[in-house]
Image (cartoon, rainbow over all chains, first blue to last red; front, side, top):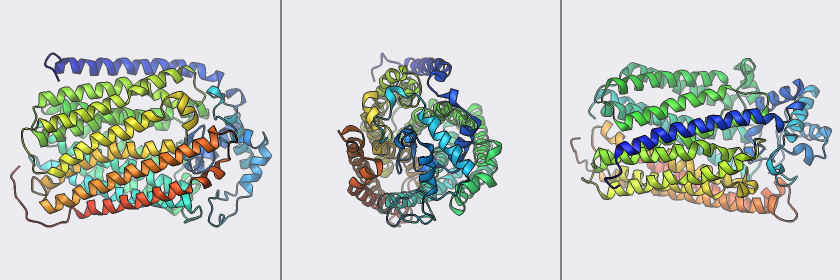
Length: 145
Length: 459
């Protein structure tokens, strides 16, 4: 690099730029947290939904599925599964319950988790709640996820 | 090796390579599950294989970073490590905690693991890459603090160089941002938003500082180029990394229920994210061309140049491919993401660790460089692993483009599983490339044991 551009200048760009943009990120984060209630469907947050989220985590569902596009890509997107299943929590519960214990020969299959009826309901309510999050441009692009 | 305590790095590097092998084996298992859906089901379901694959990656990269810090900091600081015993103790703590976590993943259901580790007291499990039980996460914090204390005291009481200060900043950031892994609100949007404060601010933020300082250190050593020149490059590269990467976090906030302005901010700033990686490529080739000596360790120079190129391709180019919001609308959460993830992690963080290991290991074993035969094998492993990774990325990109078209873009979108069946060929090809990668890794390990005519060169 040319001599007119000194190490001191490079250092100042690093410290100045780094600190400035970190502060920008913090400012935007504050604004985001303030505005999230408009889109996060928190009006439908219940104890049951929270229990469903814990169940979702305890069984590492994200290790195969994606949720709002994040997670693994081995199994279908579930952020809109409530819509895809005809806005019917019974259909979601039925699908989870009906998974064979030993899988399906040669094919991918969801494990049988032996959930109790309460757990199934909590999980279905959690998926319904996520489906209600208002994503930009109504992502995903269509019901197939 | 100028300081005795540098030798502690050897332990860390050996563990890193061993875990790397485990990571690749589980990668091959997952790759096979993509085409033979019931492979190892229900003993090792896909999600378990995946958490072993990704967690081993993270842990071995951390072993690599720590080993590298223990190697380079004493030499840069011109003093012995502050507390060598602590570095050794933390090695065993981290290794045993890591091994127990992996055994936990494989020996019981994930729900049972959550139960026995009392996840309910402070639920942090079951989120991508943060699958570790809460007690393991606490163990990581303890190891990180002990490590930072050790490195920090060595840096602050010794000669301070730009390399050690940048490295220290990166390592402090790594520890601080990991604390967000303990925040897990019921609100899914907030959960996702702050999850990225660990994941993005690690790999597209502070880890880049660690990467750049490691690369700068090796380049000073193998080229003999004036420190002033290299430090100027280092500053400007990491400046661009932070200027683009901090607000660039926004490219993860397009579709998770966060405000619309992130579409613009995330697109613009993340479009700048390839710049630091491009500068890193210019930097590496520039200083190697201006080298004042021909270092006998040709393999280390190859790894260093390879890191710069592959990090630019994987993180820079493949990241840019799908980072603009209108494109990401279609590609978000598809095999395109997987393609980018593979080459970015390999090109940036795997390769910089292998660069450091390649440079430091021979010295710790008593020679400035390995014998010619060993270096030839190591360079073969470089090409096999790197080319295999290029093909893994290309096949996943092919799979991803078709997936986007069939499932999201065409007139009559197909369901997820119907789409997957149509792109099986690409998954088979990816698996084949993965086998080539494993062969490359075997050669890499073999290169440590190849005997040849040793040319002893005093360091």
